[in-house]
Image 1 (cartoon, rainbow, N blue to C red):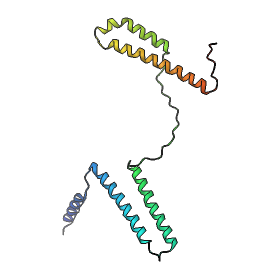
Image 2 (image 1 turned 45 degrees about the vertical axis):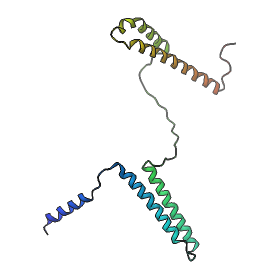
Image 3 (image 1 turned 90 degrees about the vertical axis):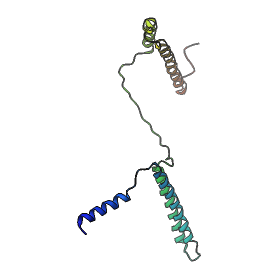
Image 4 (image 1 turned 180 degrees about the vertical axis):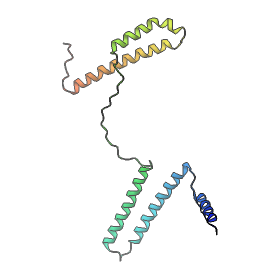
Length: 165
């Protein structure tokens, strides 16, 4: 046979053995993997059932069974079929947006926009609604800030006195 014929045949074999991407392939492989692991464990346990098998071989067989399950679990976690243990993450997040205006400045701007809103809203029907939503967001943000400060005051043990007697 000519070298080119051999190379062409090898290429045809590689192409015929190629696995096309299929979303169900992972599920099928995971199913086969679980089945194979179960069969391996069953064969190991069947082999060591004989009374002639020494206790050390039985212990080793159980250890091998555990290793099969352990590797199966790790593989399933890697494929996303089993959860991994939750890990605690502590981080400080700093996001620089530049200088943010305080609540009073933002409220003043919303009030100013409400005053000119009738002029602006002639061309934009959602303008008044957007100003209302912004005003409500400012109220909630201010409330959340005060609530957080109050909570810290109580939790830190400084609380009890709010300045009002």
